[in-house]
Image (tube, rainbow, N blue to C red; front, side, top):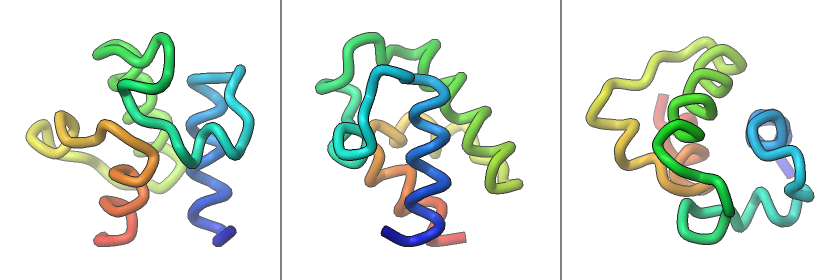
Length: 76
């Protein structure tokens, strides 16, 4: 696992503490109980702080999985 992935896993676990690292990597909005719009805002804030980035509003609505977050971070 890359450093970016490890950091992102920690972000997800801060918002969804019951998820194991393996669960986080497979996480999608449809698979994680409690991942709603409020959790998305919280998760986005944690990720923005960790990676010192800012997501645009239109980007946030597409961040519906671990992989989507990873892809957006990787494209910056």
